[in-house]
Structures are given as C-alpha cells and as structure tokens.
Amino acid sequence: MQNAAQSWLVYRLTHNELLLGTAWFCSQIAVFALGPLGGLAADRFSRRNVVILTQILSMIQAFAIAALTLTGRVQVWHVLTLAGLLGVINAFDMPARQALVIEMTSREDLLNAISLNSAVFNAARIVVRAWRDCCCRCWAKGPASWSTA
Image (cartoon, rainbow, N blue to C red):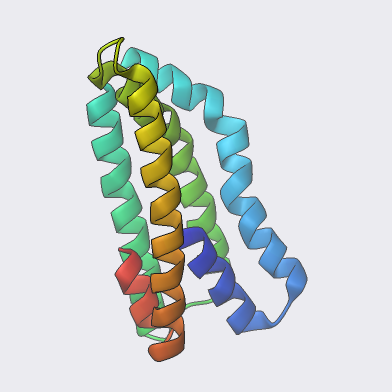
C-alpha cells in the first residue's frame, strides 16, 4: 500500500509520468541491490527480531510521509527519498519474513504454511488496495498516508 500511495502522491504533486516511474524505481532498486544482504541478515540474526525491526522502521517511514503530507510540506524529493528508504527496509524484511515462515512450521506442515502465507499475502494486497482507494477518494492523501502507518 505504501508504494502505491507514494506513487499516487508523486503524480498528484507533479502530474509527471517520469517522476511516477522514478518513485517506483527508487523503492524497487534497493530491494534488487540489497536483497542478498537482506538474506544474509536473515541467516545471521534472529529472523523474528529482523522482522520486528523492519516493521518498526516501516511504521516510522509511513508516519514521516504522512506528517509531511498532512502539514503541507511534502515535496517530490521527500517522497523519492522515503521510497528509497522503504526499499532498503523491504530488502531486509522480505527474506527474513519468508524464512520465518519456514522456521515456525514443522516439515509436515511446510507446504500448507507456505500456501497459507501466500494466500494471506495476496488477500491482503486486494483488501489494502480497496482500502487505499476508499481513503484517497473519500478523504485526501494525508489521511490515506496515516492509514498506511
């Protein structure tokens, strides 16, 4: 939801398709570049602690963009910088989260756990997109950003 909200915010601020693509690029290039380091962190440190830390950092990032938006001080470079930061956070979150699912289940239940994890993840994407669209249409970009946090 955060990536889509950031992209929507960039487009609303600039009406520039190039900057819209740049916002997505900033959030995804970090995942691509730092993914191996995220996997290394998931292997070396407690996966549970890595996931908790990344979720706290994601919340702080979401509060930062919401505060900038609600105060009317948001600029495009703020959004692009925070999108890059979210990409760095996700580079460590995704490997740790996926490895945590495997660590938490027994061998017999592993296939069911992976299937359930994928189903919940995809269902959440649908629900969150619907919620985001309602927020953006009914309120404004500020409350939509707060709902992400």
